[in-house]
Image (cartoon, rainbow over all chains, first blue to last red):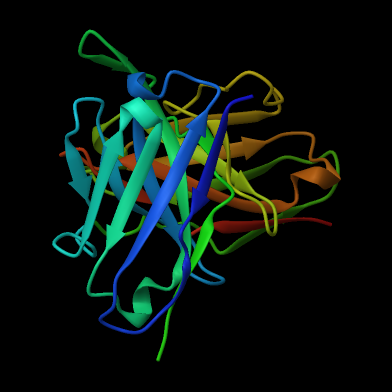
Length: 125
Length: 110
């Protein structure tokens, strides 16, 4: 079964840090782009970060410089380091599978087809 | 990276059709074919319903269809079923390996 399982969420004070993890199973993790998407309480979805199969990383303007994403293909895992946290970062964070990549070509583009159950991050004093 | 614009709500009776719009700019929706739609039921993770404007993943009913004209994409649900009641989000490539979602539309089946 294709599965993504996030962990590491919790309560943290403003200015604090947290590290989220995502364990993948049931597919060839190293061949897929991966993403982090968050959902603020009662609100919509927001793309946070993307990771390519060669380790390239991309971030939304709202988190660039504060969040760092990484992947460890040998362990089929993804991580998101959250630093300088703000109240506005309070959200459910989802680990999401993106495109299948082979020989430099990725497809289908933009089909975020597998989602984890999410992990809640609460930033509050 | 401004969110795409969706109507906050839409509704229809069982068996009817409903269309949800998603308006962006020439830098996202209008500039690429990489528009997707997601369905989210309360307390659940989103589910991919449409990708690359009008393609359905296996397992998604044929009554879900997508289209795009200029800077506006649309999701049409034909033959509404009670289980279609959910939140729907559009999603588009925004260039430079970044992505943007719409604000979401709550679909009510009357």
